[in-house]
Amino acid sequence: MIEVKDITKQYGDNVVLDNVGMQFHKGKVTSLIGSNGAGKSTLLSIISRLLSQDGGIVMVDEKNVTEYKNKMLAQRLSILKQSNHIRLKLTVRELVSFGRFPYSQDKLTESDYNMVDRAIQFMDLKDIENSYIDELSGGQKQRAYMAMVVAQDTEYVLLDEPLNNLDMKHSVQTMKTLRRLADEWGKTIIIVLHDINFASHYSDYIVALKDGKIVYHDETENIINENVLKDVFGLKITICEIDKKRICNYFN
Amino acid sequence: MRALVLTIILLFLAFVSLFVGAADITFADIINWDIEKIELISISRIPRTAALVLAGVGMSVSGVIMQQMTQNKFVSPTTAGTLDAAKMGLLIFIIFTPTAGTTVKMISAFVFTFLASILFLTIVRKIKHRNVIFVPLVGLMFGGIIGSVSTFFAVQLNIVQDTNAWMMGDFSSILQGRYELIYLTLPAIFITYLYANKFTVIGMGEDFSKNLGLNYNAIINIGLFCVSLTVSSVVITAGSIPFLGLIVPNVVSMIFGDNLKKTLPLVALSGAIFLLICDIAGRVVIYPYEIPIGVTVSIIGSIIFLLLLLWKKR
Ligand SMILES: Nc1ncnc2c1ncn2[C@@H]1O[C@H](COP(=O)(O)OP(=O)(O)OP(=O)(O)O)[C@@H](O)[C@H]1O
Ligand SMILES: [Mg+2]
Image (tube, rainbow over all chains, first blue to last red; front, side, top):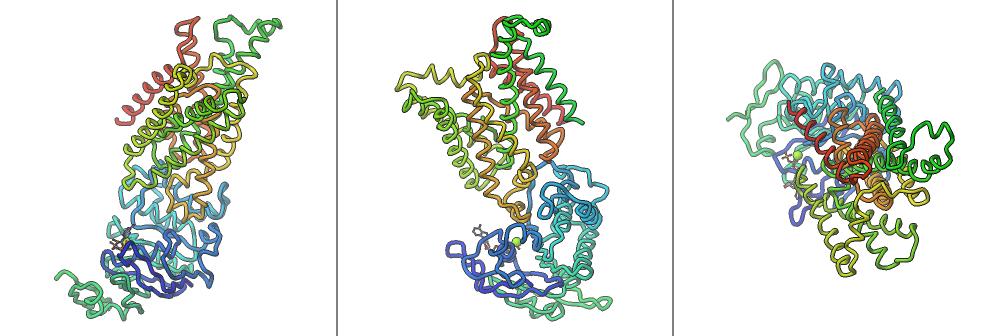
């Protein structure tokens, strides 16, 4: 389980995270929602030790992240940031293979290759696996980065707006893949989403951030509620039910 | 396979290199065991060829490491002040300990290149907009500043001519007993090869490196060490060879990509081949005189580079 306690982060006088505490359920998909600048990316970066906090601690499996060896943590927790620029000329397959780096630094084993194949298949990259990433479209690139994280095969997977640049089909496919990772492989997924309908459909829990504070956290059905969403986003959202699924309409 | 082809080409050129020069030596002389000519070969020709190969491998591999560390394809010992720092190290050595031996000279150059590389990397990390062109421009300015400080002292001490003479890349005066420091590039090259995958990860940036569990700063330090050791030992033995660390890695990257595990041997071999060709050309064109290697490297290198850019555009 990942648990954050009293996390505080500020840039100058701007308090970006204010005493944030939270437990993320194991084997579940948890969505982080909130307006631009609410602190979602900052929280994710702190959990994954890419950024250091000003106060508070992050526990992964009852152990402070700072106590983990780099390699051991990389086998347990992975992160994909909101925007990524790899300027190297690597093929999709080579990039995804680097997801196995925490396990086999220099020589990939049979099982590493299987994992790479699976990740490529999961992210629907088979037909472009030998293309160089600097020649791909934005969405294809995003899927290649995702595949690298999938190949890393960690207990905890943190993704910051992974649907960026993806078309509808691949967005849905990606979310289904994440569900599968949680349901079949027992992975714990923490994901930042902007489209509330994706959050509503595919996550077990939703955590809402506002001005650096967690304002709501609960099971999905308790968050997808007109009053709650209005409070979080400052936007009137009507919720209708289609085929027994709640759809949020925010085009008002 | 590609590496094999390149190795054969390299061996062939190294062989040619042994038999080109002002004094006429043929393969037959060796078979006839002509003592005088064999001595010439072992005193001057073999050291020269060995130095060319090591400098070619060393400078291009250093270029690759620097490009990975800064995530910028246009950074190289020439465009990051590294060569200027080595020069300053030599100058300081001349000023303060004119009588000390080559070891002190080496240490002095190494320390200066190492410090300058750290400083450059710190500056690069501080830059907010890491524009592809901006970073090497900063590097050139940085090198310019170091260079002008050196020149200032050289002028004061009336040794401008001397300092310029050392810096001019030149393999013609290499002799047995006076070039062995260049073998210090070997450990650096070996370490780089062992760490090839780690240097590829470094090139993905700090966040990806951390995500993959790599100790980013430790690898950066190893990279700085290897680059400084290579550049300073090459500069001390042969002077500065411009653009090699820029051209060779870029050409290899354009054709074969950036997966260093796969491409580092190609970079190393191509660097040596390229330098041997430049040296042979310089020795042949105005025979029995020689064109300085810096000139041939710049001309041949920029032509290849331009052709590749145009070819890539199509
Ligand atoms: N390096 C930085 N220096 C100063 N302020 C920063 C820095 N990084 C983030 N911030 C500030 O921290 C706040 C939270 O940023 P964060 O990236 O966590 O937001 P977010 O919730 O991910 O937003 P978005 O939905 O736009 O991605 C913002 O107000 C931002 O201006
Ligand atoms: Mg964000």
